[in-house]
Image 1 (cartoon, rainbow, N blue to C red):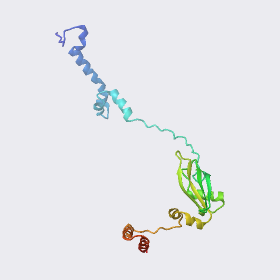
Image 2 (image 1 turned 135 degrees about the vertical axis):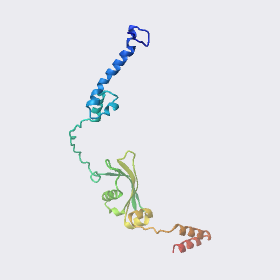
Image 3 (image 1 turned 60 degrees about the vertical axis):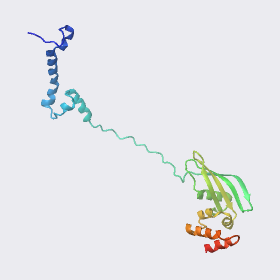
Image 4 (image 1 turned 90 degrees about the vertical axis):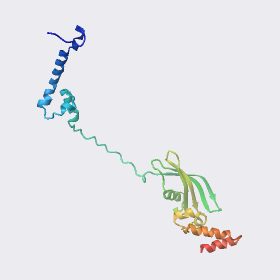
Length: 214
């Protein structure tokens, strides 16, 4: 009986014999017996590239058994103090008594660790206690929080009476306190008044402006 070789017959190239190759190739299909004949899911053979072992390993990933993990330990957080409970410390510097404007003026440093800022109303009440006056004669403005927080710096004025406060305070700060109401004039009326005042000279400008206001 004659044997056919791809190359010259030699013991080192025995694996190239066609008959041996085909025998080993067909024997390798024995792994599919379980898949084709005994499996309820025949498409697993195509999906797992003909390996029954690989099919089982893939099923272990795709159909993982659910694991019931115990609930995490309940840790009760410590209650953080509210913004109102954290006190603010007020310190004054560069204090000066201004007799011409009937007021005391100062620079105010507010230390408020744990708080973003302190309302002006609270600062006014504390300054009123310090200088033994009512909070309505205290004017606070210009507060800026330092970089990093925890400290703010601004100005405060303590007037001798409410009459002096209304007399010397600018209108925009009186409006914040509700003591001044600005009259709303349209943009067109302002421009017309300006153009009328251009046509006259001297003290007549004031008369034209006053007539426009009426």
